[in-house]
Length: 463
Image (cartoon, rainbow, N blue to C red; front, side, top):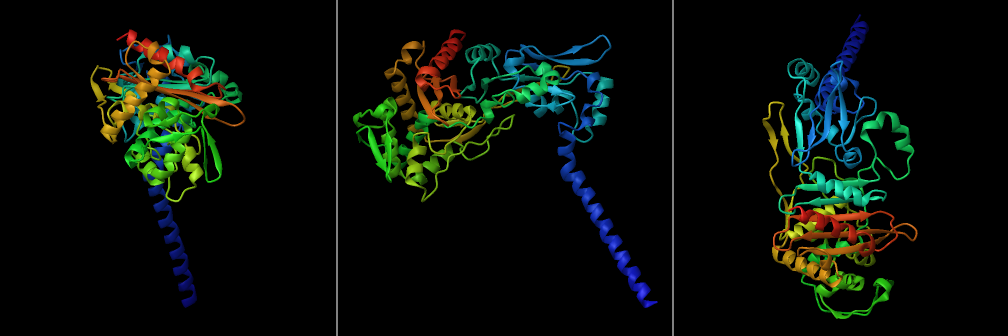
């Protein structure tokens, strides 16, 4: 009898533990997992009645319609991108089969005007009561976006233009592109096409920056008090590793200004040793390296390994934009925007406002400071970048005072990425641009610089 009672107690205990475990699992699932699964691309419940519902439109900063909803004769709605290649990565696609991407995914709740507690019930209610979702107005200038895409079409790379004073993204183009209107019919082709056509290179590309990074390294040298006079012999040796300037050119006695103008590798390689990795790490952290960038889309974090005791050759290589430095074109534009904006790095913004079906403003973006960097050093580097643009002839091709720097990054094999970053005008910069041509094979000043200068001239011709 006693043994039977013990067995019953053991069985009861097992059942209680199992019941408690199930209850805890369901609670964890409902609280922790359910929101993510509910929002997942492949969750078919998110598509309930969506064909009966008009997703909100996308507009540019001047209220030009970019992505529209079309009501068919049977009362259902279809999605239509008016400029598919221009916004394929930024706005993204909306597919019943393959889910959503870009802002179509990130702002799905707003576009459908869904509540947070019960989105499916809310969706059905909205279908019956209103039939359309909220519109999204972007900070993008459509004309500049179209002009930038025209310059980049047929190439591989990305360009980002921002307003340094507000952080508003004025243009963001990634190439090669695709047609989001035809995702369902061309999905397999998109997956098989060379060049990672679905990747948004503007925010998820991880590029070695080359000499455009010297503007940030210049800030590090100034911060450490090591922006000294230097005898440039065209070649130096760091821990047994030979480092040369482009074509081995020697520039003689130079300072930081001349080092930027001539893009001297040896200057930054040698003086980075005097400044030390801690100084570089501190300033690069101030430029938001190795951190997440708050944005309406997920941005790949930039990498800048500067640690105490690091290999001197890696410190040298990192200082002039090679080594293990990787960053996105958006982050480059933000860095140059911060230098232009007297050391104030603004949080990048892509969504200007969300507008309800009755015209009310549900969300209105405000400018936010992301990082503060030394004001005097930023002013000095900005002037040196202006001198650089004058010295290499870039200023002669632009109608307003501007600053800029080219970069050429060695990649696998013997090819190169070509880069150019610039901002203008000098007194109150309204635009900062960074452009990357991937696997281009030419120097930054040859390939990327002319495109950025064209963008600047186009922008200011319309102001």
